[in-house]
Length: 197
View (cartoon, rainbow, N blue to C red):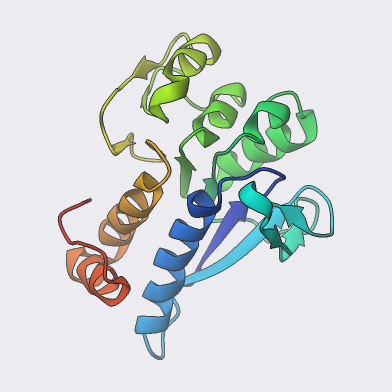
């Protein structure tokens, strides 16, 4: 089994569970596969040094957008920090570049705003946190916005709704790539209620 590089974008005011939930799902899946490592998970920031996540959590990303291994799976979490990143051409261009070669591009919560700004949601269906549906419509006028759904799978591009929905989406991706039994095993190990996703 080839190891897939999973890159999780980090930035100031990133929502903690938006990145920590997917980090846990993909890391636990690898931990449970003794002898094989289906996922190598890295956290990535624009610049070196600590990132100040929501509510004061300080996180030290593994690498930067300039030295990150090309991701097979790119995860763009949300949080208040996405509002500043919408106008950050370096980060938006990095997301675009990664999307060209990545197998999957995932967003959690308001991370979908960054996918929209990068032009990745054109002609697709997408979801996001219920409080920013109108902003997503504004940024992605050619996208069908789906409300009240945990995640929306377009094949390569998968968006998820509010904060905890990133766990559901990540378990869905594990099932999609490795089979339902593997996703169920990961959920059980995490104590996550099977059937949420």
